[in-house]
Amino acid sequence: MASNYSIPAATFSKVLLRPQQKRSSCLEFNTFKTQCNASNNIKNSSQAIPRRSANFKPSSWNYDYIQSLNSKYKEGKYKEQREVLMEKVRSMLCKVENELDQLDLIDVLQRLGVAYNFKNEIRNMLDNIYNMNKSKNMKDLHASALEFRILRQHGYHISTDVFLNFLDVRGDFKECQSMDDDFKGTLSLYEASFYALEGETIMNQGRDFSLKILEKYSARTNKNDDDDNNYLSLLIDHSLEIPLQWRAPRWESQWFINAYQTRKTMNPSLLDFAKLDFNILQTIHQDELQYTSRWWRRIGLPKQLNFARDRLVESYFWGMGMSFEPDLEFSRTTLAKVTSLATIIDDLYDVYGTLEELQLFTEAIDRWDPKTVDSLPEYLKICFFAIHDFVNELASEFLKINGNNITPHLKKVWRDLCKSYFTEAKWYYSRYTPSLEEYIQNAWISIAIPLMLTHSYFAIPYSFKRDELSYSEEYCDIIQFSATITRLINDLRSHKRENEFGDVPKSIQCYMNESGVSEAKAQEHIKSMINTTWKKMNKEAQNSSLPPIFIEIAVNLARMSMCMYHDRDAHTVQDPQIKRCISSLIFHPITDII
Image 1 (cartoon, rainbow, N blue to C red):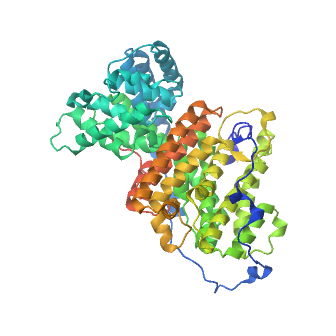
Image 2: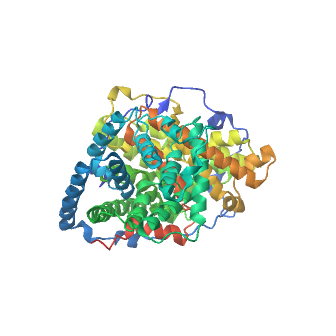
């Protein structure tokens, strides 16, 4: 399956990595604070060595179940029906003339998950809206906020001055906007506020103002029962849970298809198209998961390393959340493999390996030489060759198709990951609690996002200049911001569970230890850091010279983390809620198509 994909030619340093700088000591492998006296006897060590255990549950979906997946929506008649409906929707786009109606339709298409089919039409529409309204002052809050959000989402530089009309003489948002008939505008303002950049105080004011009003509306028990108010109530409650900018698109589309059905002005053809498109895309995702499952069984890691998490389906789910469109299948399957491998290696460092064994393994990854792994215990040899063979296979395929050698870049990210894991292992065994800054400096690497995004970069269908392939040291800002968000939200949801079986202090404990504050105040501080990092990423997404498709994948990865770690560690803890979510997105089609 993978051999049929078109892999892009590549560059790395000019766009994906920063110019070379001095590396942080947390990744300098040769300057360990804790020296280990490992010897060749480790490979023959007794099973009596005390091992930690996290008591991970087995995968909820076994190999036979995944391979049995099938769907009637693979049949040609459904693809033909989809084409007919798609042309109806395209005709709708061409006929809409009112600017607010255009923006609303674009918003609906995006939330339904079908906007990717109409990229050119949407771009032309937004170009016209942007060029016509540069000097226009709108007096409708909903229209102004919706335009601001959608234009910023698509990379247009739009000023926050569009909201000046809604401020009073003191510079505060006018209280009249809280009237019952303008909750729609208040919701639009709230959603727009999450596209803020650092320093845009008017957007902070808008968020605080709209949040208070929406929370009061959500708490009311005497809401009207008409369709439009029911629909608005759904949107408000959904937004207060997680704002739209922080939601993964594929995850959002499955929810919004159900919500859109309750809208009074719902268009049946558009709804039918969204459902059919969802189901047909789902068949592609099922095929990819089956292919990846066969690869996972062939390399046999879960069976040989039963101390670690088998999270193939969840790993594929991450990739699907980052890029669900049909032309990004190679990115999804590559990410599923990378994330599954990284999960095993994470458990190796966090749970099973002794410090002496982990030093030997980290050294072996750093050397990247199969001839020098004899000193490793058998289970570490298995881990080494799983990574080594995967990188070689991917790099070989890339070289064959595009003539570029990406092996040094792939080796680098695996080395960096293992060194960051080993730094945390040393902290754990020495009972060292780093400062929050020292922790974050290492932890945005150990969360494995740089690993995932680097592999994704080489797997996207984008053509780069061959002469730009070179080497560098530092990851670019968009990777660091996405990784930092993922690390912080992960810490908020997993720190208590991980501390129970023994793990390095997380960001919350580091800040508590450093500042002497309560756990509640530390959590608020981490949430504030997440908000600030989102603003930085919003700016980087607008200004970066990276391929737009890669920028979207990096942002979507942060969005996936906000959903996966919203109220649980969904990558590790297989609770009924996440099982239902994964099942509805990958395994079960939407059935009530008109």
